[in-house]
Length: 92
Image 1 (tube, helix red, strand yellow):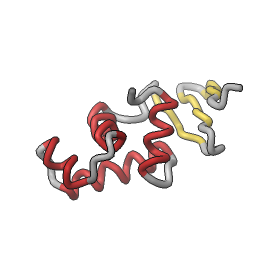
Image 2: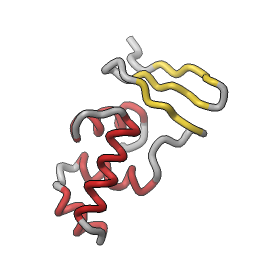
Image 3: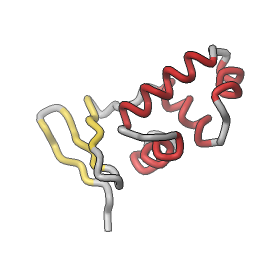
């Protein structure tokens, strides 16, 4: 059974994730490359401090970007965001 469905809505697509939530995908890009890079580090289990040190950015910037990722993916936490991103192909 395929849990992900994509429906065409003018120039937008609606991605239905396994949790019954919808993520609006505009012009085939939901997350920026930088947000995907941060999410890859989250998927590796790194905390915000370690991510900030690896990417040479402030911890506040990491927190803000992760909050944006949660909003864009309609995720409630880090594990949920990683799961949705993996299922949607944003990260490997």
